[in-house]
Image 1 (spheres, rainbow, N blue to C red):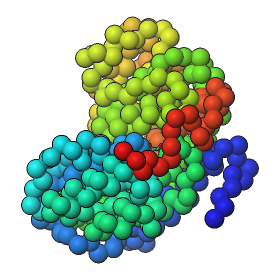
Image 2: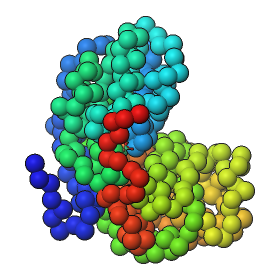
Image 3: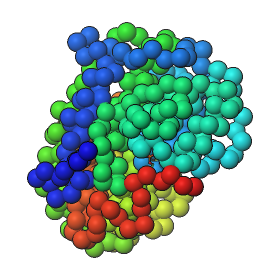
Length: 367
Ligand code: G6P
């Protein structure tokens, strides 16, 4: 069927702005919002007896999986391995009895992700697919499917499918935590309550649009950008760098902030912007000391944080994008928005084909 851009200049813009709605829709599918509990469909395995989760995916879906790894480990005490699907399918990893393979894919047709699912099934893993296209091959072949309800995504650079993958995986991690006795009923309510707040917070994040548009004008003049983060902000830094290079063709790298001193610090000068993703969470102070290292070398810092974080960041930045304070659990869902907007507006200034970037395909069904 026909999907139209409406009042938006690009599908990507429309899809970014749809996020509060489609994430709410996805969450409503997996949560009992009246009671602040998770409510997943019945799954053909028991989280309590799982030994390990193996996640395989490509591109943006891979970064959603990396964020989920932090959640499963922290909130469900469940060990997670994650690999890009093109490696997982060939590396002959031994997989444990009572293991679960999770594949994540917007299209449900990505060749490497499908091959990873087939490998996992052959190795007697339980399998679960998080997919946006319920009629896809991956959805058909997985033992269980958790659909993301993002609706059709047209822009090649994934936005709303990513945040809906995160919403689904967050609900799954809370369900796993409950089943494994890793979180109390009270903690479950707190986490679910935090998830329920996400759409409202996403709308507030979208209000940063004009500030980010302004920032994009100087971004468009740079050759390289570094993204830094710790904890779940680390995979988001990787996603931010991917988004920027995909659609603006500016070289960008994401790094764990703690790795700065092991290499990328050599790149810091007065030309390269460094985007620091740092919500006020348990690793905020650590990220601030990395930011200090950038500042001491005359680096250009763009800080994305919250009100409390902005109050604690005792440093000059080129720009600080301030989001509301929120439970650290949900920060990847909300911080995804400024990261996407920055890539989008930069690409618009550069005049690239935002929805159809050169050399990229929406769905990669060949190896
Ligand atoms: C392509 C797209 C990316 C996407 C990746 C995985 O490379 O350009 O945006 O993240 O495939 O796609 P999937 O459909 O499996 O999520």
